[in-house]
Image 1 (cartoon, one colour):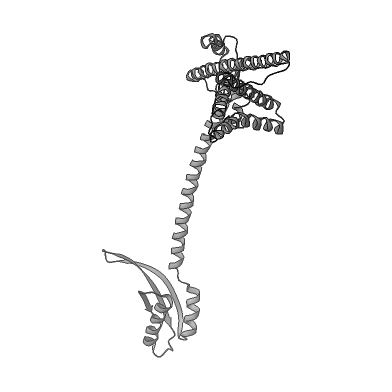
Image 2 (cartoon, rainbow, N blue to C red):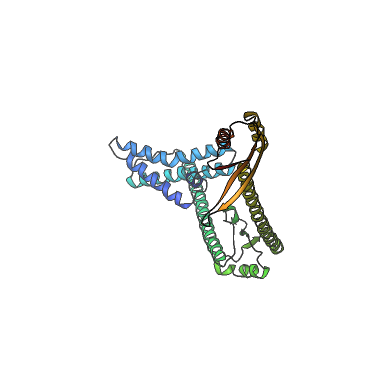
Length: 333
């Protein structure tokens, strides 16, 4: 549905003047000797008669009888007043008239045509006045709605159905805080100031939601407190996790510095038959400038070993290589 379609379902007196203008264009064009003026006549008729017929067809196709009736009324207006305008010009230009043998029949047809023309013209005036009053009503209602909004009342954007001219009612849907009845009654009392004395002002709003809003606020505050507690717990857990990671790192470093002495002693016994005893310890020493931790091994050899000096050097070299140590002290007994 377009504005152009709707405009042809509610004709008024303005359409009468348009039809008269079309009829004048038609007869003036046909009264010229030039054949090119026939185009003007065709356009005048087409623009006046085709749109209402198309609208009437749309009304029949959609089952909307109001559209069909309004469009056919417009078609009737155009047909009658185009013919009337043409007849007036023909009389003015003194074209030869058809002679009726029966003068009574001619008068009867003339009276009938005049009656239909007056009836259609009166109907178009009535519809124009009704349309004018409806527009005034809608403008006044819109002015009232704007003032209500400016007063601080929240209104859902109104639709065309909320302003009903036929029922003389204005329906407004309010959201947000419940408006006191005294304030709403005050607006109803002001209707006469907008020219809406016989109009019914309907306010539609939900129940008082103050308690619900307070409950929602309490829940929001409780949620914020819980979030703060959870955040505090998360921070505490994170501190503990960091502490655990630090201890794990320190423990890993400690294990890295430990020497697998049992395995070393077994390998040393296999590689050096003359070794009777092997001990191990960590010794911390300082020169009063720096402090260092040194790995110390004590080795005892059987008396039967012929060359302990060479064995001692080989054992020390093997231990440094095996343990990947730069500094190592070996004491031999």
